[in-house]
Length: 272
Image (cartoon, rainbow, N blue to C red):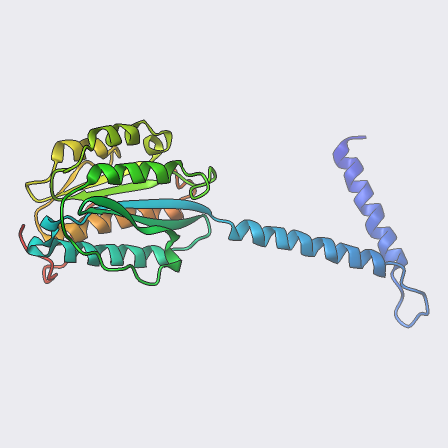
């Protein structure tokens, strides 16, 4: 007898046996299966709870922004444009479904003498409002690379089950610290190599050669921003790409990176 036939006959006998033992309406026959039915319901509840846990445990998708907040970002309201673009990006991420991936945002700023973890890696839907960035001082980009490498390699903050991180570097000038070694360490990091890395050069004074090396996504070469409007376009493109990742059956795959057009009446059109 084949397994399929054996299984079918076994189920049939079980069903018929159960029906035979069901009490007839109006009879005084005792109910024998109350305890068994109770156990069955308990088992079903456990299975249901397991499914709910699996649905609620979406894998993290880390997004780490390295933002230049040096003194030169004050000119032409570049810092104002970046603040608005970041707020818009976080709000969009917060509204995304978390069925497959939970977008988490971290922000490292570099301005003055050192870089700072301005926003720890946090689920986007838990960020009520990001503290406004202020621009001042020099451009310690190397220290920002160091903090980014440390964050990427921290398996408590970014567990192995997380999807590939996304790094976004934005700058309008040249690094003022010893950045080469820190950049080499970032490039050598296994997790940084697997991450999608985007970069935007703001204005003509940005370190385009290094920023081109930083960007590694074949769909997104270095983006050059000539005005505040372009900053918004870049961040919206990043937002759309990451949002598409989070909804994809495989968020680790590369998604299309397209720079959107903004309405003609958009106020962010100041030339740098």
